[in-house]
Amino acid sequence: KNQVEQSPQSLIILEGKNCTLQCNYTVSPFSNLRWYKQDTGRGPVSLTIMTFSENTKSNGRYTATLDADTKQSSLHITASQLSDSASYICVVSGSARQLTFGSGTQLTVLP
Amino acid sequence: EAGVAQSPRYKIIEKRQSVAFWCNPISGHATLYWYQQILGQGPKLLIQFQNNGVVDDSQLPKDRFSAERLKGVDSTLKIQPAKLEDSAVYLCASSLELGRKPLQETQYFGPGTRLLVL
Image (tube, rainbow over all chains, first blue to last red; front, side):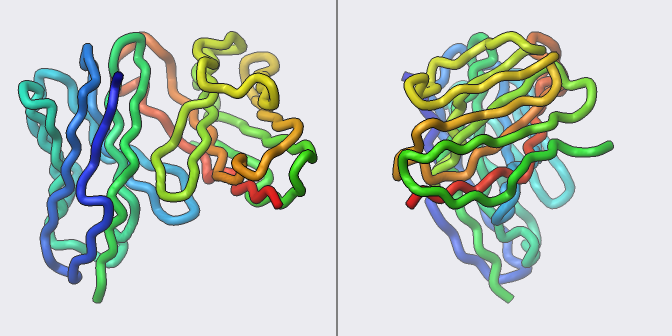
């Protein structure tokens, strides 16, 4: 069964600090992996997308990594800001473009 | 570029009542998705359209849920009759087209409709 597990479930950090969110998946075959940011009361917004051949992708202060061998991905946030408070969802695309969503990591950035 | 539009934003109904949600995708996007997102969980795909044809509705509770995409543009999702466990946010998303490069399959989500069933 295709699964996407994210950790931690929730995280609280102080403004300006860095943090790393984890995503482990068992989706096979693998097509691509995306990280989405979902602000409270809004729909998810795509941050990064990585295919099998890519092992890192950056979008401003967000850097995603992918290890297709171990089926792990991480999202690193540098110099966090209050506006980074949101849920971060890992989504893996497999065969026939079926998407498997993780449950998300709820990040809270405190002043 | 206008985003995905959804209405209503909020809806409160009693169990056994009916409810309908509307979605207008980004212009030119062939693929449209309806998701159910229960609090604290990731979105769960209910149904996926390519133009006006259904690609995947394997997780749609067809005894009470129905969806249509008239003329391959707007879409409506209906629940009849609603149950307490249907309380969730219903997200609509659209993407350029399936079967092409991953970037063109990026989904753009609407703000969602928050449903509360009492």
